[in-house]
Amino acid sequence: MTDRSTPPARPARRLLLVHAHPDDETINNGATMAKYAAEGALVTLVTCTLGEEGEVIPPELAHLASDRDDTLGDHRIGELAAAMSELGVTDHRFLGGPGRYRDSGMMGVAQNEVADCFWQADLDEAAGHLAEVILDVRPQALVTYDDNGGYGHPDHIQAHRVALRGYELAADQGHRVDRVFEICVPRSVVEEGFARLAEAGRDFPFEQVASPDDVPGVVDDDQVTVAIDGSAYTDRKTAAMRAHATQIAVDGPFFALSNDLGQPFFATEYYRQVRGEALGGGPSGAPAGDLFDGDGDFNGGDSGDDGRGSAS
Ligand SMILES: [Zn+2]
Image (cartoon, rainbow, N blue to C red; front, side, top):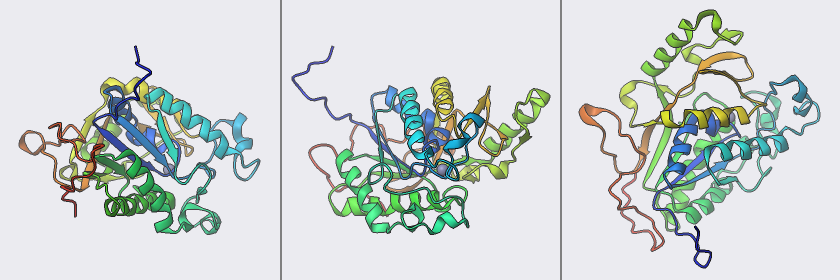
């Protein structure tokens, strides 16, 4: 099928996601990534750390944890690769290379002070690594967390800072990404998801139920700019979540992290645009259904940046 004599053309639509740890991409954007990859877009994932400080769910793998063998990072490289295979994503990279930045642990722990942890990273150096990726891939859409990292984890906050600084550095060097989006979840959707979870009653598989406050990035509904309907990719997202077995336990339409608090699974994923020309929304102010503007006039192709980005 493939003509080996010519290199593959660069896909017209290119999406870059910046995440803190392996598993964040799948939990937050797994359906979005699978959808765009299936549609032929280039989906590039940059993960900033190996997630060395994560807690380990399966007892038989507990020895990997940082307070025992400290080999969880290497293990999670494999989990991430398996998850990306489930999502159909082939371009996944670690910021500055695997292991360049170590997981900083939760806010306030001693690991925040470790010299090579991501929280201690020099912002311009880390963002410089990301700018290299941006100049290589020339994405039109960039996805990351809000300025609180969704829920205050230092690596998520730093990933937000690096993404926005990398966006600026790349713009100075010749490619301005058309649009930057922050991951969010509309409050009404979270409340509906937890109502569904409550109805599951005693069929519910996890020890306790999380509350809407445990969900990162909850915003008022009118803050949501884009809603990606990933329902056709539910199976792929679920399989990718299962691939992150040290971090996620999946049971039917629910999942839990190492805190064993059950949460509803979301097949539609939401975004709030924070840079670039506003996307046209749906009827009566409904969110747009696409992270790209859909007119086929994509900025930043191989012919170079035309500089029409209007980001603030
Ligand atoms: Zn994370």
